[in-house]
Amino acid sequence: MNIKSIQEDFLPLIERPSRYLGTEINSIKKDANGIKLQMALVFPDLYEIGTSHLGLNILYYILNNHEKIAAERVFVPGIDMEAYLRSSNTPLMSLESKKPLKEFDIIGFSLLYELNYTNVLNILDLARIPFFSSQRDDSHPLIIAGGPCTCNPEPVADFFDAIVIGDGENVIMEMSRSWLKWKENCRGEKEALYKMWSEIQGLYIPAFFEPKFDESGFQSLLPRFSKYQKIKRVIVNDLDKAPFPDAPILPYGKPVHDRLRLEVSRGCTRGCRFCQAGMIYRPVRERSVDTILSLSNKSITATGYEDISLLSLSVGDYICINPLMEQLMTWCEPRNISVSFPSLRAGTLTPELMQHIKRVRKNRFHYSSGSRKPKASRCY
Image 1: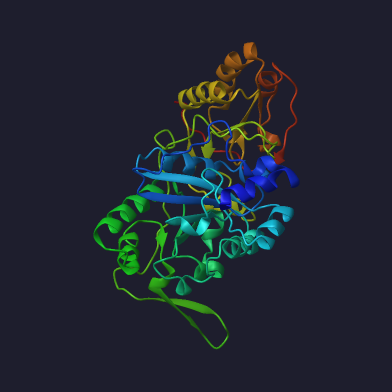
Image 2: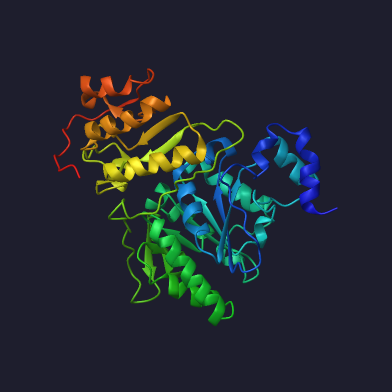
């Protein structure tokens, strides 16, 4: 009996078996023939949390749009499933093809919060992959990471071959194209791939720096190569041109955010010193009203959701929020689709905005702090 059959036979005996099916609406399964790069996108938390992460869905969409690349998802198994995997000596597998994680070419982790660092190690352990990059040879997959935690990558740098600093939409495809070129020409020499990756903006290669500690225990990094001394954070300048999934995966089980999520802007105008997100997602970038309306139409058709969530650090700071809501609610009202704001400063909630929102059904608001007024800009 193969590994896939063993896991499927156990599914009726565990909690929430839909976590492990991998057959959701809009999930992507590719024929292995013609695929050159197999990448696992790992969210180090439970399925219900990870499947709601917008960044993972964006990368899944971008990578699978390339004919030679197949991206599959991996989440932390539940306690009962983990116990079964260990007792049956079964390795952790991806959702789509039930392929053991250690057989992928690249494994990419999304690091959203530091408390999940232990889950990163647990996943590597379940996949039977050595923790430290220095312990992995050419037979092991390359381990990379991205997300807000990479603004301070050193606590986990020893575990990864490469770490993305900043927005990942463009970097992930540059890394993939470099890998395809390396695989074809360099015959698996990892150092050659590192050098190719080091030329990509926003990509940190820990192996190319030597950590040094002073008498007080403070660390400094000494570059190994004169042409690779600093890593500049990479940003997506134009969100309208950035790829965004218009047919997101529709989970069987109920995720923590069971609605259509549309990112209207990235970054924040406020500059609050206590807010990490307001600092690391700078500068402010906004999607146009036309782009948001087009994505709404396509995504609702592909999913059947009855609630749209507009995502931003503070949706009320979106400079064209009233024109957007007027047009969006005109389209949503006859379809009985509501619009909600997961993050909104109380000072930006106007009577006009409230009138738009309650045209379909009442919604609760989640407020965020901040007192400075947003900068003005033109609607487009």
